[in-house]
Length: 341
Image (cartoon, rainbow, N blue to C red):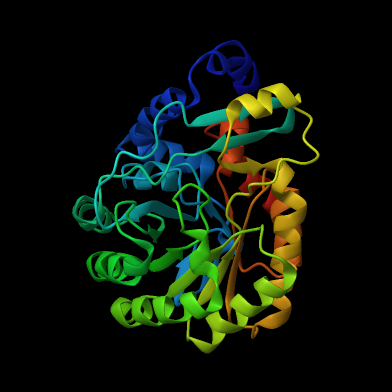
């Protein structure tokens, strides 16, 4: 049913507008008594629980950052069967993001190009919503992904991240430093070890007891992945998220003119699968067994999730698959994982 609806209606809508419409449905799914009914059909099996970061995840599969930028869908996404929701990316200062249009479907590739630019209401607004969300007994695990405010100079990035961490870490189940989005000028340069070390150390100290992770790009070469992985372990972080979106455009099925018209931005979805899995393996080989590795990029089916877990992922995240699978996506994943046991 959803694929037919997608082909006939949703593909004719602006992708960002369609996302906002979907958000209304998701929020409704989190309101009682609707949420209780929905959970009867979507909740993961009890044997899918994962203990990591000192937390109990009801399922290894969760929502990646970028889907719920302003902390408005946590209860609904939990009701739909996701084991955790990573909100954000949140910046210390509110910002509108890049000019529209900034989100593009590549249907032939089951992919999306986005150059959203961390559009969000800022850390103070996110903190207020997180306080309300934490009062919900049925909420999923909530991670908070933080990034650099666009108006802040790169050389002042550490101060900006620390400001967000101080406001949000006490309200987060875990915190993520995002230095890998391609849509904020200069951000990916923060992945250089000499720059990243003091940033992570400062945010770690600001985060206190809240587990801290760093999210890395798939476009790093293997040596850079290993260097950042060693740094994350040495700095006392709790984990790494591998990976963010890619700036690569090779091997796409979508015609070149359509891809060129979409322009710059991060590519997510199926084309990212191979590199995301390769980076996952590189990270897992270099870290202790208890170090958490969350795999994201090109995940759409239960088999994809199983492959990432077998390759060493502690948890798995998805985003783009929601567009192509619809609101019962997490249920499909959870049921597929249960059948494989």
